[in-house]
Image 1 (cartoon, one colour):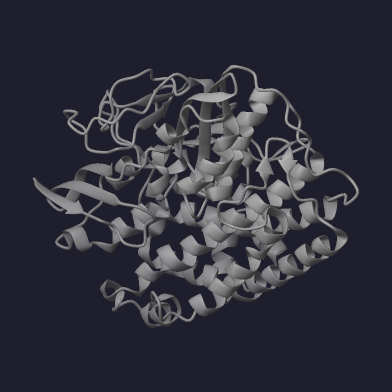
Image 2: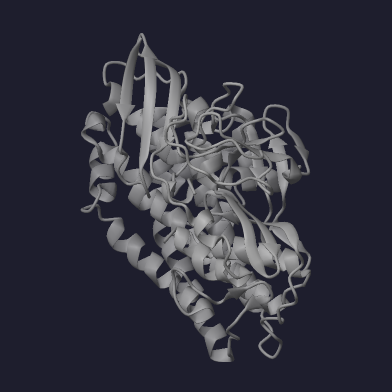
Length: 480
């Protein structure tokens, strides 16, 4: 048995280290370490409750709207108020813009450059992949990054700035959009749709969202000339549908709240059996047996974050969230599987949660969310309020959930006399990159790496990179 330590990973937000125990060239065990401790939960203690809206977004510079909205959801639960319908629509537009930007960055900046590596020089598709996707010099970046920047102009219209906006409140957003703002939103979305239909998909968005089977996806890969099709053809050659199988239990807390419920509903799907049920979110617990943390209550509503760098057996600053004692995977794959998108369900039935299904789900969600943003923009009512007033905070524990690009994000808060008495955060990467629990069960990424044939390449095996990046780690959100 040999041990390989890979880290720090490049093209990752924050510090990540992966340890692989390899026997006869095959990974037998994996340990994933979040080696950076942040402490935002402790920064919030004793402060006025509304300070969470200013401090929590600064946890991360790429998913700050998600952090804002989780804090706002917790405050809304403590106030028992219903947000203004226009406020929900504007919030959803801004949140979707951030999540699309995350998906786009992941595809073009974090994931696809690995196919331009010299390890694939013998593949027929490599010269084209190198010219298109190579880090820094690839031609795709010159198109994708300006399109992303243009999309994020929607954030300026709604939230004033990005990241770390202060516009999001429990009752909606603080800025009402004028008619000219709505027209600008429509123009920005039309421009972004043009980029998607010209470059990423080389097909109408409606044709992408209508894909429903593996066979239709294969035909699309062979018929369309966009970057998504290029990925699909590479994935077929490398058999990415066999790589990085996750735990099979998929969680979504519900995404993009509207007057009639979530655009993508909440649910817990067992991909092995096809059973879908309401997620028992009150059964979430945090295990710290292998984390650099002291023992406190397992229920995040009553637990504390108390680091202990000398804890025996610990190897990560991330806690291990578990739902009914089981590791679950979160992200776009979970959201679309729970929502019942036929293509994602067919991919899951064909091979489970793998590198291929995770990337397809994220790119598919770009198309789905762009269309949703168009719907939400048309539904705005310019003469109606965008925010309702705050109400007095009730004492006691509350929780706010949202779906960030990488998956389910929860903020558990306890308020007392208008102050924050306790605050706990479980981020998507905390779920997916969690360490082992007390029973020895590995986290989702740790499971996905087991069985990988790394051969003689060991730490330089590109397949390790593909599996890790398919979960898109944001380590600065992970450990607080």
